[in-house]
Image (cartoon, rainbow, N blue to C red):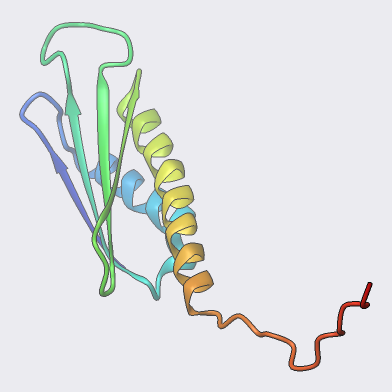
Length: 120
């Protein structure tokens, strides 16, 4: 699974933040490694240079092999919290999507010998 980390001009995208994001993605989404080809992380400050509560935004997008991407967004007070929250949301979303796909692939078996209903 490839991880891409991006920030806008209002967030300082230093190596430690990028490393934290990759570690979180590997820890939270690692079990989907076969199905997810790439995770893109976009971090921004919605208020720019102004202060504000819950103004750090993390958009996280998972690219599933042969499927449409799944994207989630998390707002938090810090970039690290936004990354952690987005990863958890993405895990739930990917898990749900893959479970639905698995349900569609599982054939429904119909018993051959059904008991006849009693005649009235």
